[in-house]
Length: 185
Image (cartoon, rainbow, N blue to C red; front, side, top):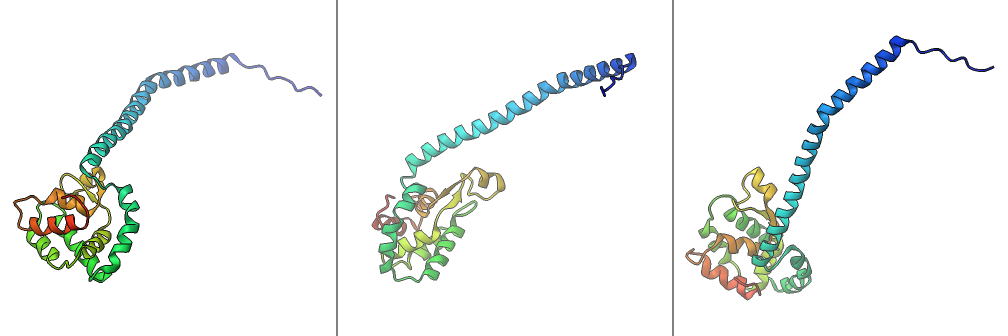
């Protein structure tokens, strides 16, 4: 038995035409807004990628030991720290003390000096360096949310270079141990 087609009434056609017109009108008004928003989002992410690329390149020029280099040299550090006079717990506390002295606005040079005076050999410094690891460093001390989002993970030598100048009381002893461990300062 063949299905019987129900005739479409004229009022149904008019309603369908009105619905299509309304949907088309809404689409025409929202499409430019959607395109604009998606364009802004695309520009944001492209800009972020470009900025990260620029700062990464500039950072690598200033920061001779990048994240990748720190991982590669870990085997050398592991071998050297066998000669350390510090325990791992002491090194961890000292690394945290250095971070606390440099994190945020201002630098506690006296505290840095006190920590470095406890170092007896380059293996001690390397153990502290290893325990410090990579921590977010921003231009404003990584103290607020935005700066932490824009900061990069940096190792202890980078932090020390950024936070200590030749005029600081701790500079001679920091320079001594950093240089003896094989890093430029």
